Length: 229
Image (cartoon, rainbow, N blue to C red; front, side, top):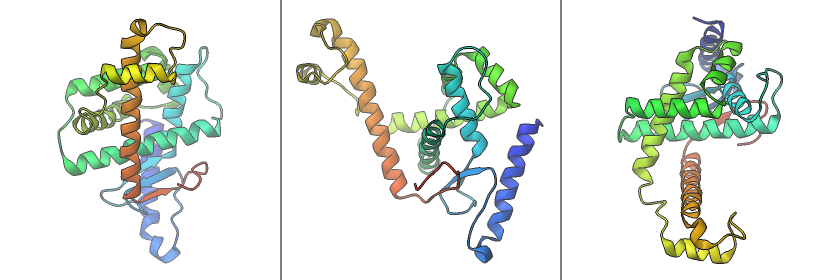
């Protein structure tokens, strides 16, 4: 077991140990825990998001946005906040997927998400450089890919037809001018606009799903950069 894996396991054990004394102390202070989804304290059925989870995903995104040496210094607070929100959304949807048990992701789904994570980090080689520098086991990336694959399968089952864009919608949006294809002929950008509108519709649908799940799920944020969520 790598040093990072041992640290992760210790953080989870510490969290559970602190939870046992929560009733007496009235507060849970868990070093290394960013958030708990599904309960105010760690328990069966709740998902724990570690500070190291947020740090890793944020550094993956940064690695994909920058060239040169892997950044191992302090991360900007806005990036950490945005990454925590992203992971909370994933945890909420993954938890709902487990609850309803619609379908399980296939091996191909997991491989696809693994490739997307590699793309996020700027490619497989760059992701390897990052994980080596941080002491992250490959199994941790695979677990991340499996969780994202579960989220993908759930969303595909629940968003069928939510992003069907017909020509009338494209014509209307083109005429409104509210699109990034200014100065181009409609027929030249019809299909790129369809792709853009589809992606926007899916993002809005996912955002609404997350909002609904947030409203009915207990979320305890412990990260110092988490603010009031």
